[in-house]
Every structure is written in structure tokens, then in C-alpha cells.
Image (tube, rainbow, N blue to C red; front, side):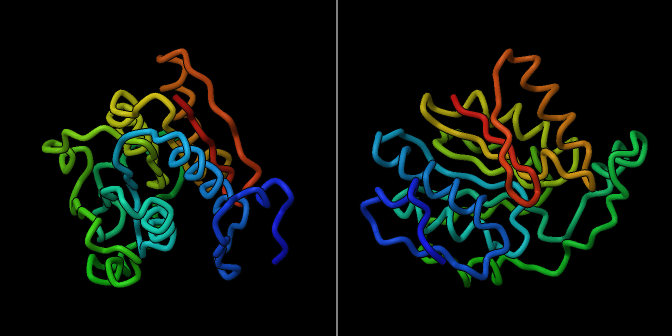
Length: 205
């Protein structure tokens, strides 16, 4: 795959996996990570909604010297989060994300020693996390964990940091958009939608 002109200035050799299903999402992460690292924005990195770790491994790759917090049930959607989905007709919440494990995820990480696994129901699994963050990926698909993720991470996001939310414009998971708009309206902050395959959105601080 040819390098887009907007990415050619990057000093490092690009190693975009052309098998990854979403070039725009991955390239956006690469540009953001370069900004964060070039500007020495402090903080750890996190993802809520890891599944098999296909996106998380790039977080680990682009931020090799930072702790990477991995939040997931590793068992699929929690019934507590399904209730609002069904009540508000956001989604059927029936996609099976149980086919993963902590061991499977860590096995594909380039720097597994930097990974801190938080297995279980979020935000309870974050009760002992006292870090600040430079980048956070929210990819939980459902309204409740997306909103709770924003509530938890945005105050802990350092100036110059970013939150990327997956599925913002995904008709299959309509609650994500409502969760983002609610939070950003409450906080009086903006967001930037992306034209990637699942309609991600980026929130900068």
C-alpha cells in the first residue's frame, strides 16, 4: 500500500499491516501517536474493549515506553450493559466477543511487559488506577461503558492527549453516538468524526 502524502513526513519506517481491516483508523492512530510522542505529552495509554487485541497491539507498538492498560471482560458483553441497549433500541447487543483470552491478547503484543491487564467489569476494574493518560481507545460498542469510559478517562487525560471512540457513526451500535454527544455536551467540548469504516470519533484535550 502506498504511503499517503500526509504521512510521508513521519521520520520512522511505517509498518502498517495491510491486512488490518481499517487503514484510516490505523493511520489516524499513527499520526496521533507521533504528535503525542514528538510533543512529549506525559501519561499512560489505555484501551477499553480489547477483544483479541488487534488494535491494542498497535497501541503497544506506537507507545513502546508507556504502560498500556487493557480493560475487558474477555468474556463478551456484560448483561448489565445490555439492558439500556435493548431498552433504547440502540443495538441487539448479541454479537459474540467471548472468543478471546488474556493469554491470546498478550501473545501478539510487541512489548507485553508494558501491558497491565484489567479483566472484569468496567469501571470497577479501574478503581485502583491512579494514572494520567496520553491516549485512550474506547471500543466497547455499547452506551453505558462508552459513557463511563469518557467520565473516567477524560479528567485523567493530560493536555495534548486524545481519546478515540470507535463506532460513533455505526448504525449497528447507535448508543455510542448518544454517549459521546451526551458527555461532550455536558463538558462543553468538541469532537472530530472520522471517515473510517466504523465511524470513529476523536476527542482532543
